Image 1 (cartoon, one colour):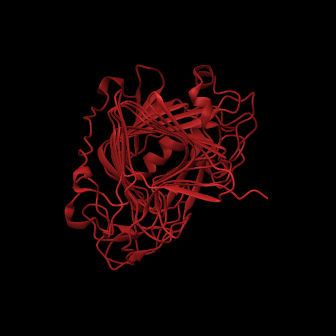
Image 2 (image 1 turned 60 degrees about the horizontal axis):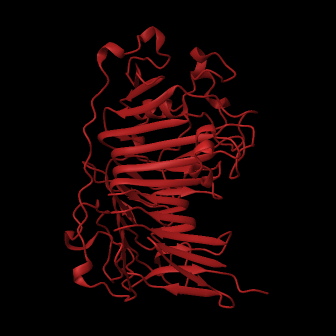
Image 3 (image 1 turned 30 degrees about the horizontal axis):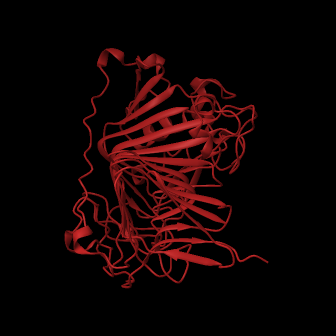
Amino acid sequence: MKIKIFLKFFLLEIIIFESWLFSMNVVQATTNNNNMFINKSITTPTSLLQTPSQSTYLPSNLPPASTMVADDDNPYSNAKQDLMLYYNPQGGYTAVVYTPNGFLDAIYDPAAKGWSWDSNKWKDNISRMSLGSGTSQSGGGPLSEIHKIILANDINMDDIDAGNNPYGITLPLGGSQGTGIVNGASNYRYVHVRHNKLDIDGNQHYINMMNLNIALCGTRNRFPEENDVSYKEDWTVENTTVYSTTYWGYLSANTGLASNYEDPKLRESGLNGGYTWFTYKNMNFVGSQFAWTGQKTTGVSIEGNVNVNTCYSYTVPNDNHIWRAQGGGNQQNFEVDRVIFKSGCHYTGYSYNGVNMELTGKATFEDDSIVDLYPYGTRPEHQAQGMSFGIYMPSSGNQDSVIEMNGNSKLNIHCDSDDPNPIQNGTVLNVPDAAKENHPQYQFPCGALIWKVQKPN
C-alpha cells in the first residue's frame, strides 16, 4: 500500500511493507512556497487553537411573484400550500416549500414527466416509486425539472401529519412534545428521480430530518451506473442548519464513481459510471452523521463556513425534546471517497465517540482552506488502537490514498480530553451544541491521522 501526502511543490511519499498498522499524529500542516511544517505532537498548543468564523447564511430572496406557476399548472397545489412552483430563468422550476410534505414532494417529485403514470395522479402512485428498494426502473429514473428548493419555513419532519404521510415516514411515538427520548431507527428512502443539479437553499431556516435518510440511487445500488446511462447528481446544500438522528446521514449516495467528477467531459456527460457529488456551503450540521457515501460513488466539496457536530443527542430550537443519535454517537463526520476543501473555506468538525473523516480515496485542501478537527472517544464505529482519529483511512479498497495540501492550506487536528457533548465552556461558539443530558464520557486524548493496511500473507 502506498500513501502519498502532497504539499504544494513538495512530495512526501511513505511506503509501508510489512507493518499492518501505521499512524501519524498531525496537529497542524501548513505549506507555502518557502517552508513546510508538520507538528507531530499529540497535544494541541494553545497558539494553534482557532475559533472558527460563524456560518454566515447568505440572504435568499424568494422568486418574484410574476414567475409563480398558476395553481392549475402546479400539480402540487393544495389548500395547505405545501409547495409553490416558480419558473426558473435558468430553466426548469424553483420549489418554495412551506411544510415537510412540500419538501419531500420537491425531492422525490412524483409528478415528474417520465414516471409510468399520469403526473396529475401522482398522489395515487407514490407507493410505486420503489422508495424502499435500491432497484430503479430500466434506463434510470425520470428527470425532474426542479433544480432549486428554497425553504420558506423551518422544516421539522416530525410535524408530518400521520393521516397525510404518503411517503411512509416512520414517525416516533409521542411526537416532538415534552422531554421524552426518541431512539429513532432509520427511514432509508431511495430517490430514483434524477435532478442532475439541485440547490437546496435553507434561506436561514433549519431542517430537522429526524430519522429520515434521502438515499440517491440510479439503476445500480452501491455501484457505478451502467456505462450508457447518464447519471450526474450534483447537489448543493447551503444556508441552513440540518439536524439528523440516522447514521446514514440526512443525505446518502449509492450510485456513481466519484473520480469521474474530476474529468470535465465525464462531469458533463454523466457517463462511464456516472457520479454523485455533494457541496456543503455556509451551513451547520448536528446529529449522528453528516454524510455517508458508499463504494467510492460520491465526493464532497466544502465551501464557505461549515460547522459539524456529530453528537450523542440534540434538541432543535424552541423545543426541549431530546433526539438521540443512532449508533450512540459513534459515527464519523463523514465517510467519503473524495473531499475537496475549497479555497477560503473553514470547516470545523467535532465528533463525540467517532472519527471525524473516514477517507477511502483523496482529500484535497485548496489554498487558504482551514480545517479544524476535534476527534473524541474510544469506541468509534471504525477504530484503530482503541481510539478515534481526525482522519482515518481504512485498508479496504484503499490502495492509493492521497492527502493533497496546497498553498497556505491548514489542517489542525486538536487532541484533548474535553467532553464534547456539549462543547465545553462555549469555546467554539459557532458550532451548534448537542443536548445537555446525562451521557457516557470519553475523557482521553485521541489520535490525529491513521491509515491501516492488511498484513501481507
